[in-house]
Every structure is written in C-alpha cells, then in structure tokens.
Length: 386
Image (cartoon, rainbow, N blue to C red; front, side, top):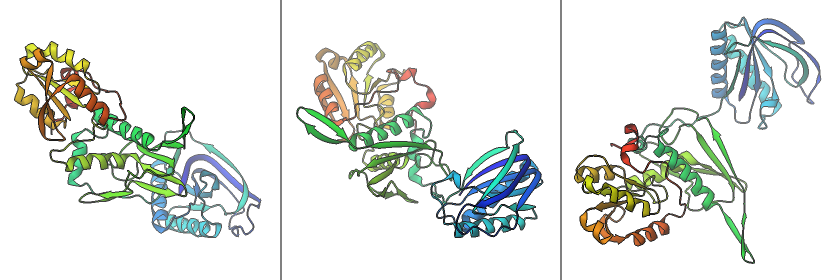
C-alpha cells in the first residue's frame, strides 16, 4: 500500500462519471472540508489486514501531529502499477475507514471507481506532504555472527563502502555473457541497480542504507539463492521470469560470513579492502617498506605505527590481511620477501614479481584501494580493533 498524505487548509471533491465498469456505490457525492488530512491511497496486490492496521496507525499518527480536524481517505490508483482488484481494494479501504473511526476520529472516504474533480490547498509546513509505502517487512533478529560486520564498521566505514562496491562489481563481472565475433568480444545482457531505503530493524550488513538491489537477465550460479546464520534465513536472490533480483547487502554478508567460518578467517582476495600489508621490522626500514609497497600490485598499505613487530602482526591478523610482508634487513638486501599467507596459514618467501603474479591470478576484479598507503594516515576510528 502506498499513501500520499497532504495536510490541506482546504479540500473538496465531487464525483463526475464512472472510471470502471462496476464502481462503488457512492455514499458521498461531494465533500468540502477545512484543516483536513487527505490520504491519497493506492491499494496493492498482497495488502492484507495487517497492512491496513499499520496504514491506519500511520495516518492517525500524522493526523495527531498536524492537529487536523478530520481525515479523508481518497482512492488514488496512480502511485503504483501493482494494483489490487477493484472489489478487494474497496473492502480494504472500508476496513481502513472503520479502523480510523474506532479511534473516534472524524473520517470520510471518497468513493472508489469514479472520476472525481478535486481541489487541495496544502499548508506547506514540514509535515504537510508525506509519502508512506507500507508492505510486509522481514524482521531479522540480531545474530552473534553479525558482529563480524560491526568489526568492519558497517554500514558507514571505508571498509563497508569498499566491500559493498566490490560485491556490486562482482555481480557485474559474473553476469557478463560473451559472444565471440571475429576477433572481437561482444558483451550481451542487461543489468539494473536500485538504491532503496531499508525497511524494518536496522542491522549491520543485512538491513542498512543503502539497500542495493540488482536485476539481471539470466542467473549467476555461483550466487546461492539463500543462506542462514544462527538466527535468520536470508533470501539473496529471487527470479521473476528471466530476470534475477540479487540483494547486494545480503550477498555481502554471505561472503563475509563464509570468510569468518574459515580458520583463520579470511576473505576472497577480490573482496579484501587491503590485500597486502608491509611491516617494517624497525622504523629505520620505513623508507624501504614504502618503496617495496609501491612495487607491489593490488591494494597495499604499510604499517608505520610506532609499535613492535608483534603488535603489527597482531593488527594485521585482526584486519584479516591476506598477505603480510615482514621486512627486515635480509629482505631489503636480497629483495626476497618473507610473507605470511593467511589463507594457507603459512609463511613463505616470494620475489616481488612472484607475489604480483599470485595477486593478479586471484584478484579478477582489480579494484583500486580507498585507503592511504600509510596506516598512520588512516583515521583511528577506521582501524580494525576487534
């Protein structure tokens, strides 16, 4: 159900002629009122008694806030293309009228199915024009696993921004369908992206702003339709004909949750905000660390904070850094890097070229970093501490 609420200093309507074959028998031929809250209402498929109750509460709440003298329910089919049948819409509007009457509110309802002439004079104060979309919302419980999203600062940290964008780019990449035309590659298929305000309880990752829905033609088999944590079941994608709708927020949580289940926890390389961190064993090696970091491809930073090596290694672990380069005198002289590889839980030697090759092979998206090179330049609130 969609409702457009107008607090009007003056409102009037009068019916003219039938708009549908079997319109509602009009109880009111015309109406003229002052200081009235007009609820232009579109009844949609699937609206039921629970939706009507919530709509009535919303209307009465605004009515009380603006101190209107009465409410007018005005059928208005122009706010949606998902309309309920006229017979059911009339019943729903009658229920809404009766629920409002039960609260001892003066309420009128314009007849359904008629062309009407109306005049509305809006007051123009902050609450005089409001729109409400009322629909069934999935109410999620907060699970223990959602702390992993809080760890990365969802919804508003640079980590969150990068990860959501990376998942969006992953969908774009995986939805491509290629046809070889001679020596050229032609991309086919369509994709659309919608940014919505979330409904219901706000939870990190799963139900936060922006709520991003991607529609593609066809399907992406590597994306599951659903998954669960200890409290909730989440629907990532739904199909409508040959169109698949994918919830980017839930897919982001799915990838992070899967990473959390690894031992030790780690993310796919394409999703990791920082792929390589260089740890100078001493501050004396900071200049060399910066030079080497600039030679490494991918998303790299340097831990230049004035801490011991043990603290730097622990910090990289909390950040789930995939490749941690330990840079001491031997590594600087030989240009051979000692690297802790998180996914394999091992330490091994790489040349810079070997490390670059491995990163290029694993990271098919190759997104740019949105972090400064030096950890000291990052705002403290955006350092992962959990």
